[in-house]
Length: 296
Image 1 (tube, rainbow, N blue to C red):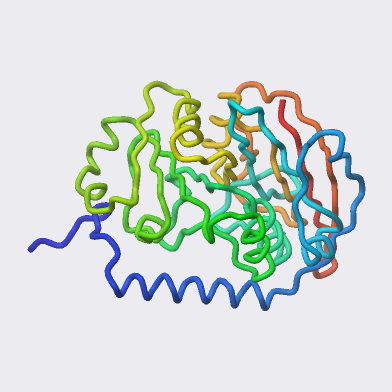
Image 2: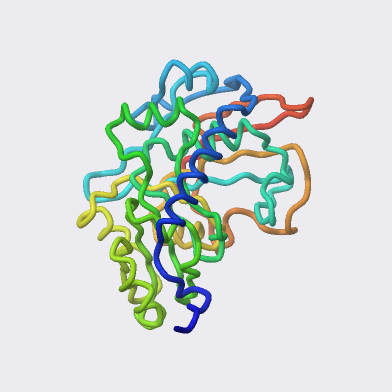
């Protein structure tokens, strides 16, 4: 029997299930041990701009209040972008830690509040690495997600215009967590075998350049009404240009670096934006700024 080629690996075996359980335990241990700072609110106009707040006693203490969630109209999906950037606006980097957001940004914002209420987490295929799996890991955030009546893990959503998807990545090999792959018909056809072996993965065909029909299908057919989009910037730009992205959770770290000239939006015309919340904290003597920004 020939070994499977890259991108066409066999679905999870018992050994891979053990690997996932180990992965989860390590992520929880890391988040639990992290030194998470307390944010200071510079201003918060969330009551004038959003309709829902979420939080627990623990998150309110560290975030300095509740997180504001944009609530989309009944026939739309709430899509939030999540980025960390350098002081000069670069977002592309082999390791986002280069920007200096530190454990507070990683565990409280990025792997925490920004997705704690999400039905699904969306990423472009080019940002998926072998150990990628998007969820919340701090025990307090796991508890908050449970209190919100949501499954332990959000659905995993991958967007690939070209159909280049590596099915060896962890997120494609956890049968208990639904996965959606959005891409063109020809691109998805080349993965027919990998998809057939993984019935928990649902392909969603995109005809044309817009992602709106696919996002609508996720909401109407699968109940995914809130999406946290974590990268990369080209996928984020598509979501903005399609009128799908409502807001962005943006952390600005204290360090330069990353790939030059890589702002989170790379399109022709960025719609009007307004900062509804600004908070800051200090880590290792450096100031870090978090902003909740409405788009359009």
